[in-house]
Image (spheres, rainbow, N blue to C red):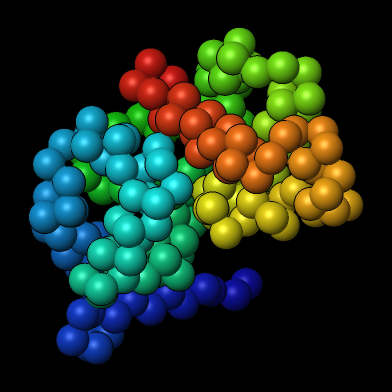
Length: 181
């Protein structure tokens, strides 16, 4: 039998327990968003999600620690959004990324043509497999290359870069709608 040792560090660089980390994070979250609705709004757009994660890091909660916390609270198959919700609101019932996609898929796909649907399905499969980092704006060129082998081929199928970028950003708001959870 082996034990996994988990270390967290306070903002001032001292080792703290997972419980202290959780309590400190709980105290920090209301400074970053006022309620679940504001968290949902921030999290559903790649740029504001990135800014929120940067603010958490500046406050002493790097993404690596949030991912460790995600494992500790047994939410590895959920989104980091669910981890923050769980910390912010103890009554929150998290769902898996797969369940989140299934709940939002019809709404997302209703607005898309077949070629767009095929690309967004690919993105969603990566999101289920890997996590929210697949929805980062910086990930878009990589996803396009993985799916279409080149940006030129992707543009031929999906339209210009502005349209592809808009498609990538727009569908995400439906993933985090209130009625999904």
